[in-house]
Image 1 (tube, one colour):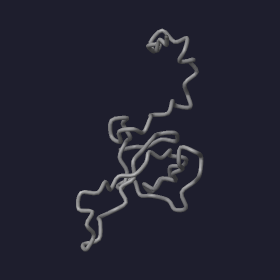
Image 2 (cartoon, helix red, strand yellow; image 1 turned 120 degrees about the vertical axis):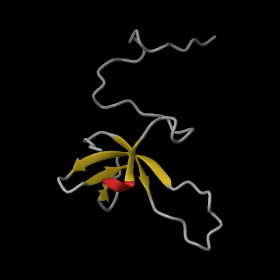
Image 3 (cartoon, helix red, strand yellow; image 1 turned 60 degrees about the vertical axis):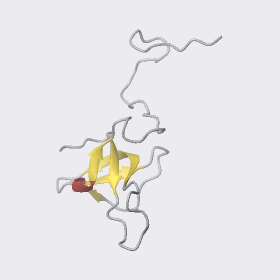
Image 4 (cartoon, one colour; image 1 turned 45 degrees about the vertical axis):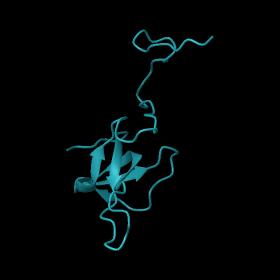
Length: 97
């Protein structure tokens, strides 16, 4: 899998300790934004608020983020979008009374 700057990803933070009661805990966290990609399969990530993570992550611990992966976490619009969602014909408009 190739990641590019700006991609949203989930990060696998590893197995839960054996004595933990969290056998069914979610181990995928995010979404995070890819900010740098190196040739040796390592990426730098930051939160959606723009705070960088302190260490680079191997791409084997990442998966692409889909809005259905984490319910309740809205998918933020991509930075390359130049369309206004309120005037775009492809985006349904919510009607309020």
